[in-house]
Length: 170
Image (cartoon, rainbow, N blue to C red; front, side, top):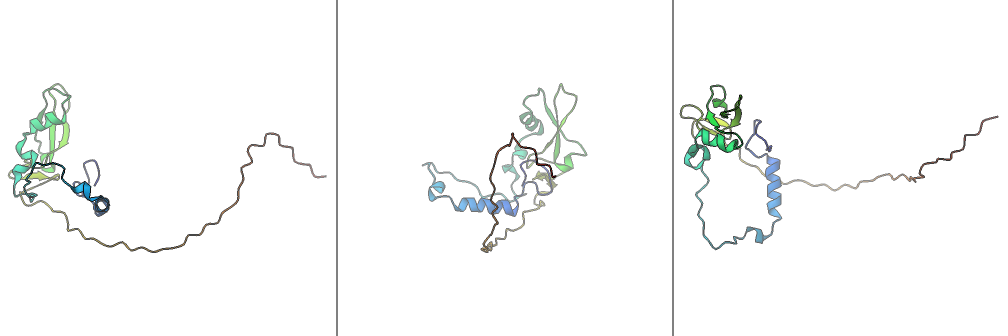
């Protein structure tokens, strides 16, 4: 997964990234997982895409509010749909005193035409978004080999400023 938007796998971690996160979490001590607060929190279960869209920010924000948060340095920013951008989960953010609009990614849950919504930058009917493939774990195999290197002796002699000219052959 790249830190910037784009690509066919945007929003999905690669198996290498998942393995790295697993490896990192595996070396943490038990203290890292202990809850240090006495307050009890309840979390709802992770929503399945398309089942409860009220949990996603794009469902509760209107597009103008979202654009204003994305571009606070401009006055009077408004959000607009466009026929060529909306199906690709893109949004136009247009400042009032600016000649051009910015093209931004829609937030998860924003409408992208008809009854369709955006989720991970894919516009589809609720429940019709692609899900991540099941993760398979493999045990890495290790082999031990002895590496041999040839060491060449080398000595730095510095710069030879007073070099004698080579003897001329007779």
